[in-house]
Length: 86
Image 1 (cartoon, rainbow, N blue to C red):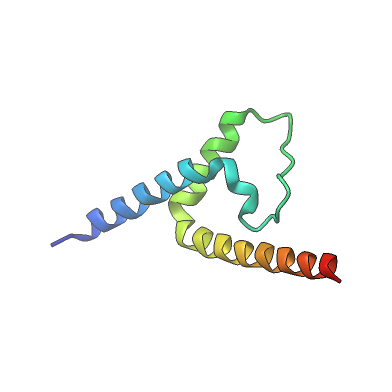
Image 2: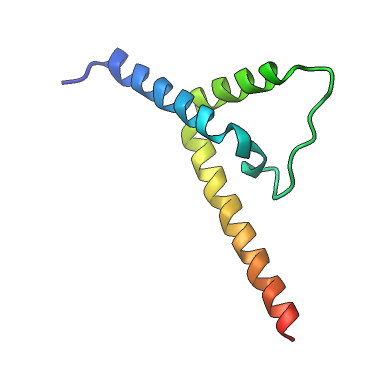
């Protein structure tokens, strides 16, 4: 049987793995289909660490956000195909 600290550790570990896996696609999490503009002042490492820490704590919300963005993009693609067909 898992105790509370094991559950919390697995939650954070899964979130960190989720952050590592989705870093290159982070613009699709609520920012729309275009790549986010990054500030030149901050190094790449800062963005990477921030994204992983954010996902480690909020990964369930990030998953729901990505599902919503995928739905919106699919809806836009279908509307564009209908516009071209007419």
